[in-house]
Image (tube, rainbow, N blue to C red; front, side, top):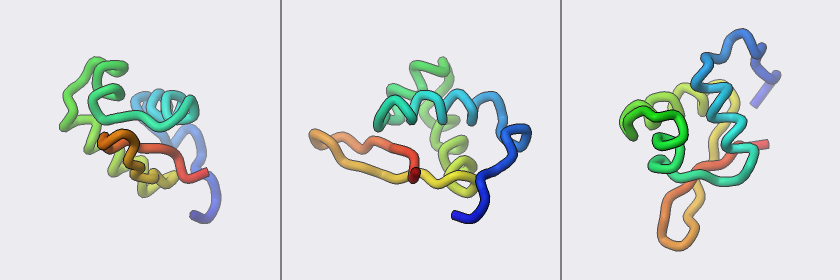
Length: 70
């Protein structure tokens, strides 16, 4: 992963997603509801965040969830 990104390089949405993902794996739907944006927007934010900090896809109870690669 390299160095941790500078917090100022992260968007407000990315910082909010990190806070949610630190609580445990989250589904796209759950993240979208928490941020009150569409699932498609969450997917885009997750892709950008994956390039910056690393996101891990996990399957729990037949549901795809995401967690931080910490």
